[in-house]
Image 1 (tube, rainbow, N blue to C red):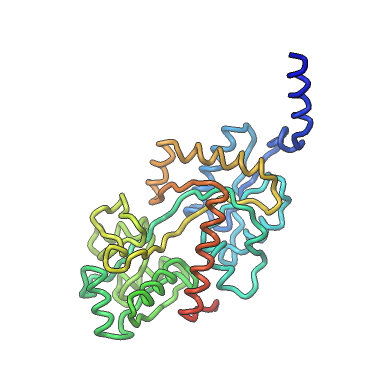
Image 2: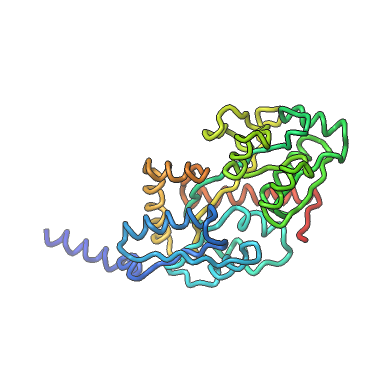
Length: 318
């Protein structure tokens, strides 16, 4: 018994001090975007879980501006002690590093913790477009080169990249029209000035239900539970087509692995709860989860994918 106690004491002494005491003060989650959006809502869910599990306050800090780059820079420059987390959409970790020649941060400045959720996009057209499927839409585009247009809330947005994937995979000539935000893009699509758009399902669904937009295909590999009757784009002769927006939690590079694992464990438990999945469904999101290694692999794969897309499509930051 004495020998066991001595061994246990020695093991505890060998553990890093931060592993024994973490967390001993309030934490913060930096959100690079404004309140109310998916990134903000997901961060508040994570914050509530950590606060309940650890008994320490978790503050969600919205650091907006420069397409999320200001918040990402603030997180990258924070101490790697586990007390600063950051909500990272795929646009800021796999798209922007390929899109911008200069950024105030780099992928290597962050350590992956876990994916949180994805928000699916749906290809919608104005009812005046004579197509009821992706196949018919591509046939129409081939018959009228350069006449069909697709909207996006800006260069490098998921809507823009999905449209470029469709253009290249479908071998069609489409005109990209970039707007300053989702609202103006949807307004012109509803008004018939634009032919089509890949829009987040929560944004598009009310207009689809009202008959003001027609849904042709969901841009994920599985049908959306929100609209199960709408086939995926991949089902319509474009196998593997996927363009979803996903969100993750990351920390500054150099954060101790045991702290990363503790955060990941709480997120995993949170995402396994039925009430969490119901909340996610309420904002049009689906839980993902996974290990830090799995998130790192997704980042590598998608970085290569977008690097190739930007080269082939000639996309440059404006």
